[in-house]
Length: 200
Length: 200
Image (cartoon, rainbow over all chains, first blue to last red):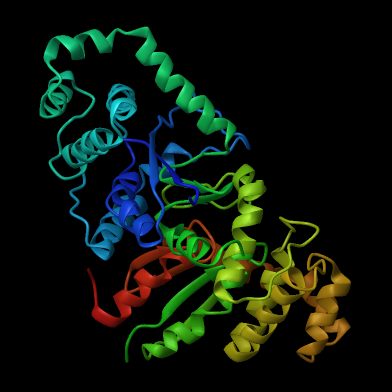
């Protein structure tokens, strides 16, 4: 069985959203599975090589236009949200809660959260929005309220982030397969060649 | 006559080198010409949106491997040089001297300088290397020595950099066509679609 592709993403990252629309299909073409990993690339993130993408870059007019163009180029729905750079820790924690129980449900939650943020312009940092997203996965408000304050759930995300740091992740989307790192949607053609022909 | 593509590059940028191998052919496929512009993206560069790519990124293991992989993927000769981040101001000044007289000679000089750095591992910050490169363009050592100290030649590069700053350039390679900005080799498929189908 060929190694799966590890797909790291931040719910605040529009590029991660675009990747979430294409990565499973790409992997399937080459008989690979994908493990999804939500992370939070905030000021606490300590990448192995101390690489940090400055916030000034992500908030620039250039990036705003680049994301719109990439979405159009990739045939992906996209609407620039009114607030970029939302705090997405709670969404990431909920993702892992669903994903650890059932990866298919994890994906459903992730796709819905991304769509809420980058198509419907909803604020996924707000509890009401998360409540709606969780209700769609059949989690009730009381259980969500419990998870918000649950230290085990918080530690689960922290461990995921520590692991991402130690594997040299520093951006979103980020892909690792067979130890090879690929950063960004624009490296997907190179990842695809790797899957098709092996290392180069 | 369709607008030309402005191609900005730094002689210290391996990604700029890779772009220099493909941009003219891409433009030709769509009946466009390319204006080449050498710039120096050092600490003095003040991009319009205050975007700065941290040196830590460019010196990371990730980028070293990424460039090698991109060169292999693009079918371009490449050897990681022993010194990354050389001071390339003099090479850029010489480029403009040749390019202002004859764009074809400018390209010849640029290609030779890039090849010296990223294939032959020669130090293009050193006067001896530049002397060889200039001799190949029939510039003698005395003329080169004059240009090294020539304030008009220094001002020529400074004006080019000021213009790049004001146009929102912040990386290498960087392409502008019809006011639309494209940063990086990985945006060339999007640039190509722009040329083929117009704005999107």
